[in-house]
Image (cartoon, rainbow, N blue to C red; front, side):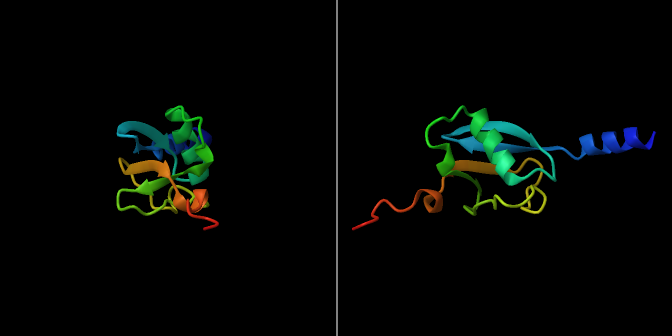
Length: 99
């Protein structure tokens, strides 16, 4: 019986965040213990992005990168939070390299 209660509690902990990519917003359900890298991968798949997905990161509306090595909870993600999916200059490097 306690296993069923724990399973129900686990389901209730899920929450939705809004992902914005190129002006399109889609909802994604996440779990507090889910790694941000997994959320990022699911967001990329949600939008069907196939070109240079490794250059993308999730950002808060304030422009801060969501740390990919943390869980959703430790990264501070909240229900209904709006996250921006966009290229990360740190991952891609600078366009003026070698000049």
